[in-house]
Length: 132
Image 1 (tube, rainbow, N blue to C red):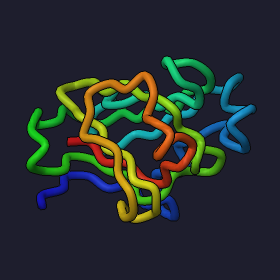
Image 2 (image 1 turned 90 degrees about the vertical axis):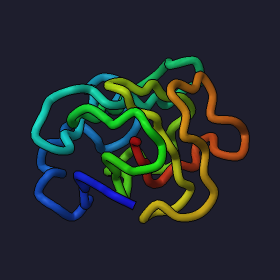
Image 3 (image 1 turned 135 degrees about the vertical axis):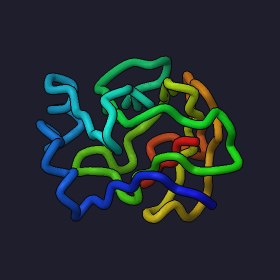
Image 4 (image 1 turned 60 degrees about the vertical axis):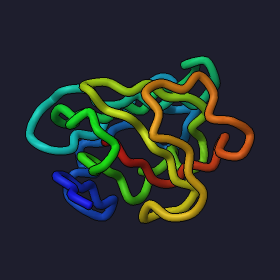
C-alpha cells in the first residue's frame, strides 16, 4: 500500500491545530490539520449527522481518485476529536475511510465520498482516518 503523507499526532504537524480542547470548543473555533505541501481541502469531519455541528477540516494535496492506494492518513485523532465523528465530506478526488481504533485498525466505514451519517456501528467511534 502506497502512502504519500502521514500525520503522527505526536509530531510537529499537531502544532497547526487550534482550539481542540473539546468538541464543544471546536464548535466555536474550527479545527484544521494540513497533510502534505498543499492547502487543498481533502476532508471535513462533522460532530453531528447531516453535516452539522463542529467541524474538523483536513487539507493536503489531491487524491489519486482510486481506493487501491492510500494518499493521506491520520493514525490518531487530535485532542477533542477522538470518537466524535458522525458525518463527513470528501474533496479533491478523495474518498474517506474511518477506523474505530488508532493506527488504522479495528472496524471500518468507507471508502466513501460523502456520508451524512456513518451509521450506528461507527457513530462516535472513529479514532483514525484514511483518504484515498
